Length: 327
Image (cartoon, rainbow, N blue to C red):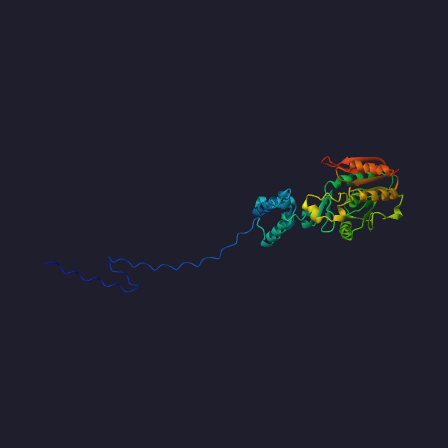
């Protein structure tokens, strides 16, 4: 006769051990941990610099990598080499540094001049303060300053005199005053905006030998007539219809510092007469001009009575400055 089946074991009370051979109840699944808030990655210098270089290159900015490094250096309060080192180390950037850097990069991508963003323009051994309302000095103007400095340095006088007509930021005047410190230099500027920038730079670099005058170059410094040894100028010389290609120049440099009439030489004609009045016999005139203007400028000066008009190239080999001697 078959055995009667044994009744099923009753389930063990909750928490009691299961009878031998009975399957243990599954543990209740542990509740999922609450998800941690998503952490924002720490911004790093290398990635920020790569992104900035790409953005500037896409916007057509020449030397995009250089500008990106200089903007990062400005934000970090470091040199360009310091910014490069920060990228090599992949330093962390504070969120506010990244925000400021990205803002400057966006403005530079809009072709606002780099010098307006950093507030400084290098010129020879100087760092000049610049911004809206003043012409940003260019590297090619350094040869103009050098010609003026060379002429000033050989004047056989203990206190030679020089005048920078249309000084703008004060670049040429301050180069002469600081590199020929026994000279006395006058910087003439008509524009109120440019004069304000020149005043800041004269306060920064000028000494007792530097005089800033708010006046038109046509009739400035009459008290110096016939006593000046060197007159230098970077006048507006772009022909009125020759609109500059670079947006930085076309949109941000003041028009009165760029355009010089139909042939670009209207201001030079005034400048020639003023320099004849200011210079002593044998004094030197130095004028910056466009690469195509050397010949017409020499003809203009010769017709006005100047002697030994000669045109000089800049470091790229382009005609950049013409000198002449007062009879």
